[in-house]
Length: 275
Image 1 (cartoon, rainbow, N blue to C red):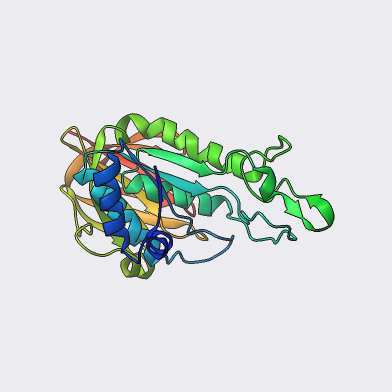
Image 2: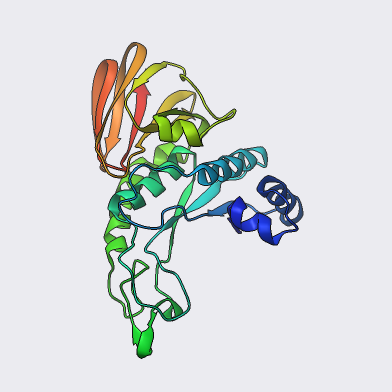
């Protein structure tokens, strides 16, 4: 059920656009879920995140999954250089903040499952010149059974997911609020909201906020859209409310007209309103 993004799929399917391809697939296969497979993070320290095709295709998957009443899953990239030919490893790997960003953006868009490519390294992804092998260039677990850096990055992401999955699994994504030149240049169309229910405005330089209905109440998944810098994000509400905040797998509660958050690069935080 894995469907690659439009700039992959379109070229191999009679040149049709990704949405047409995806809709035809859903009409013919009648799958129970969608598994979205698109790798936009290729190397560490890329600076500002600016991936128009990634967001465009993610929005299509989100929208059609809602239309066909099924959940969508999404892949995050664990490692790099997934090639089946022998070559010298280059120091271009997704770092911790980039993997967290990848996971958290998918959660903000309403993904119900996160997958990692790869979990166990295939032997063909280890080849180096002169018959050598590199068991550290990709995958959470190397082909020799070694734990690579992405294992620990994913472990950190999964702890946050474990703390919030009871909310996000029972929530419906209703749109995205975005701020900053990068997000505004990548995310457009009907998915974009300027405010959401009690949330009146947002202060910050780089953010993407998933807006959810949670059993009739409001839930917000806030993501720092920078993969290199911390971000102070302030949520301003229409009145005084109580808020449950889930950050780094910990829950705490505050009250007032606003919520002031400090997010690490690529980090995501869930805020739910208490009525």
